[in-house]
Image 1 (cartoon, rainbow, N blue to C red):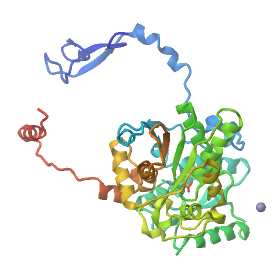
Image 2: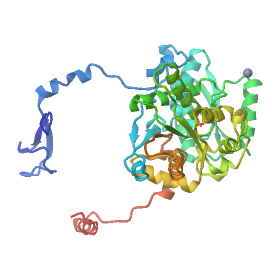
Image 3: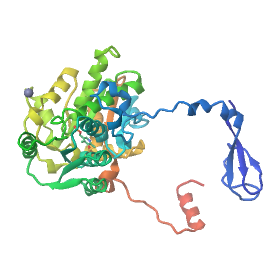
Image 4: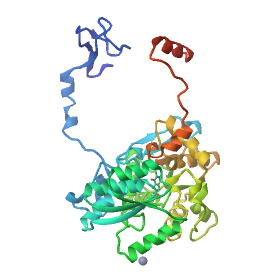
Amino acid sequence: MSVTGNALCLRCDSCGAEVDLRRQVNLCPHCGGLLEVQYDMEGLKRSADLFRSYTRSSIWRYRDFMPPVADQNIVTLGEGGTPLVKSRYLGPSLGVENLYFKNDTLMPTGSFKDRGYSLAISFAMDIGVKRGITYSSGNAGASFAAYSARAGFSGVVMVEYQASPMKKTMIMLYGANTAVLDFDNFAQIEQMLDRAVTKLGCYAFVNFINPIRHEAMKTYAYEIYGELGRVPDYSFHPMGTGGGVWGTWKGFNELAAIGVTDRVPRMVPVQPEAVCWLKRAVDSGAETAEMYGDSTKTIAQSISGNSPLQGGRRLLRAVRESGGMAMAVSDEEIKAAMVDLGHEGIGAEPSSASAVAAFKQAVKAGKIRSSDTAVCVITGTAFKQPSVVEQIAATPKYTIRADVAELEKLLGQLHML
Ligand SMILES: *Cc1c(COP(=O)(O)O)cnc(C)c1O
Ligand SMILES: [Zn+2]
């Protein structure tokens, strides 16, 4: 193929002049008209098969690995199939060439919660359940609201009072019944949910209390394996309830059990220092984790839960059996990691950047070798928590009038002329 491939040249709308495609040109050099790329139609014909077999990937590609849902009950917005982006700067700067970001900021409602809610709402419809409740720090509520709306499912979202205003707004946009939830600690929420299920007979969509939701998180393992063609050495996860890490670990174990791979990654759940109950339990060798810390003392709102569900046994198991580690990061480390991700072209909310902050910490502590492959799951978009983004992103340094002389001066200062 020539350097231009099937594209031939640029042609001017006004005078018909043809211009070399690879020349740096904006307007027609002869008359100033607009230029349009021209193609060799015979060449394009040879690529027409592209249109005869189109499949868009989503978590439903792996439906054989999930609880069954009849076709007509599947509620999907195209969740899953997100890119695994190789780090260009951060990994190499720390001497680790194989650092990857699993970019779930691109999900339909902007967070990885969509994997779980697509499956859980579809499954509920399939077994004839038409109403349910969830509790949320914001992203789960938005996802639940969006999928409920599409399904015609009646949901009530209880959203934490300290959730970012944008998260509350998105829940309202998707049209769910919403209650702002006031509480002192997460143990109270757990108790309320327990009673809602046992006394009121509610169907709840909170991780683990709902046994279906985290099954969809297995698709993290499947997709990462699919793209890498191997299992990474380390899998870093921002952890709130732990549904994401647990499901991913389960997925990797299934790949091993069916003979696709012969090992699983070391699982690394990451919490804010303010509430790091899992790290405390792992470090002290405890059988179960205890409530710890103050949820209001971190910017990582999506992972600020300070009370483990039923002793956090599942998470302790995933860390111990995989040979992984539980990590804690500070808000300062999280903010620095948000900037690192920004330079890689990924806008993450603080909770999501915690995975990257932990990766940096682990490399600096000598826990990761330069030959290791690590994946950081980037669970949610920066758009959902704009207040922190505004704090850390610089404001524009220059203001100019729409005047070419001012632009010329600026470009001169920047050595760009
Ligand atoms: C919910 C959430 C988490 C934590 O997920 P769990 O499955 O509860 O551990 C992490 N990051 C973001 C952006 C979230 O919304
Ligand atoms: Zn039981």
